Image (cartoon, rainbow, N blue to C red):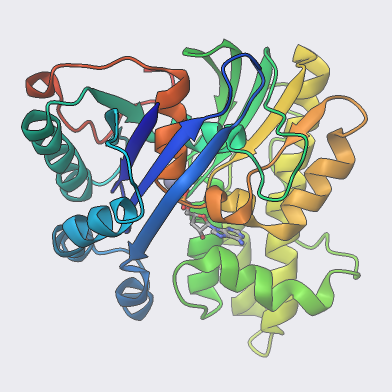
Length: 340
Ligand code: KG4
Ligand code: ZN
């Protein structure tokens, strides 16, 4: 089965075609036949954050060329269309959802709605290029989705069965990167900028900033205090070293996520642990999660291109959760939760 995935929840306009490997092997991974995306990130870098109207306008301009490009190498007809219908920015989501509905109607193909956060988790079901093992996560698994708007721990016992375990009480992990980057004068999106600035300081002791809620006994996190602590530090140290502060910020966020992930694994004893979402592109987080958890469970982390927003993950989620809806019934849902 060939599925066309469409993703337009934020500032990426993405389309991909994916299929599942041999059905005789229940652990066979999704293979990406074609994938293409464009981003309006550059225009947001200039304004220091996303302007939803600008993102939506760029989605409208890009959606048809992006889908055409993703379909251009495909020789056989696709079998179904999958689209992100939430959560995300309403103007951006609408472009993907209405385009997918139109294609479903005119091509007479089934339409599968995908929750963006679940899509991120299914990036871990995509086969790694060059890997011979083609392994996929095993149930039950604990997943951690860390993106611009979410820090969500979930437990999944089978495809489609999602239990929320805990997450952010205020700012999401990606938001913490983006907001603190802005405070120290780095452009949007802050995550990759902070990671790059931090590089030469990684061997230092990096415990200047607070790691709240580490002993809260649950899987909740809070990152708004980090922003306040960084603002205070800048005020008290006008000549501060930007790169050192970036390393301190990254370490505080990574340590918090690693400690909570360890707690989740100790509590639920999952067969696999899945890291996902834009922040999972962070090299320091990838390394620390892997070394903290690899003795206790099988750890899955997407390839970097499938950590940040992409459409292959949307197609992958639909391949394992094939639940078509009539196109007339689908509407964008900006504040959809991970359990819906
Ligand atoms: O999943 P994603 O691409 O879009 C959303 O669904 O929000 O995540 C975007 C977030 C942004 O906050 C961005 O700063 C962060 O992921 N991010 C990173 C890195 N790459 C992207 N954070 C830390 N390190 C990175 N290398
Ligand atoms: Zn995302």
